[in-house]
Amino acid sequence: MPRGGKRGHKGRGKQYSNPEEIDRQMKAQKELEENPGAAEKASDADSDEESSSDDDNDSRKRSGVEGLIEIENPNRVSQKSKKVAELDVNAPRELSRREREEIEKQKSKERYMKLHLEGKTDQARADLARLAIIKKQREDAAKKRDDQKKETDDSKSKR
Image (tube, rainbow, N blue to C red; front, side, top):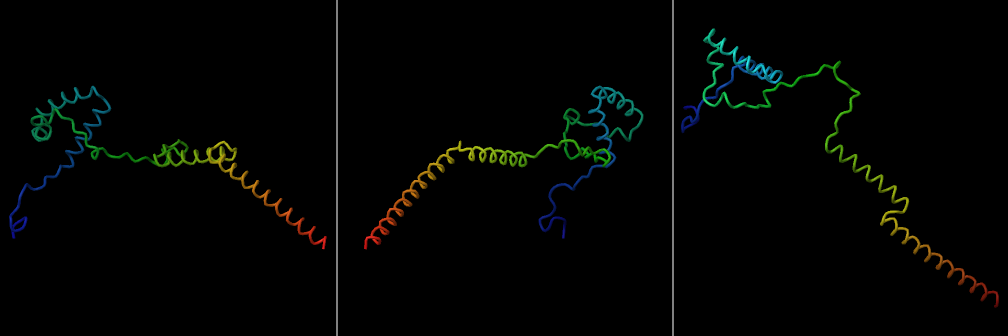
């Protein structure tokens, strides 16, 4: 059976980058980042190398607009691993958005509880008013019970 099933193969085969070419591009990119003036020197060096070797000529030349466009490939930049000795444990680390929001939430809750205990929030005022009404009702109920108890004692004592 042909490649791609009964219908045949569509498209081109995959082309893979040469590892040496990738290394060379990464070195050139690092040099450009470190020294902006090195771009002019590199272009002079490229012209010297092109005249000296034909093998590098194909890899260094860029056709068309390729030389004008700078490609920013985040996957190309290698992550620099730090050694344990270089790590600064005491340095303050940046909090993530979720951690910042969680801390703000806790602080606002603590502020609210403090104000609530002082009786300065609307809910605290409503609670205190409700408690005052309940106290008054209980006092009235206690007075009624005392009055009824006295009346029953008086009526029993009269008999």
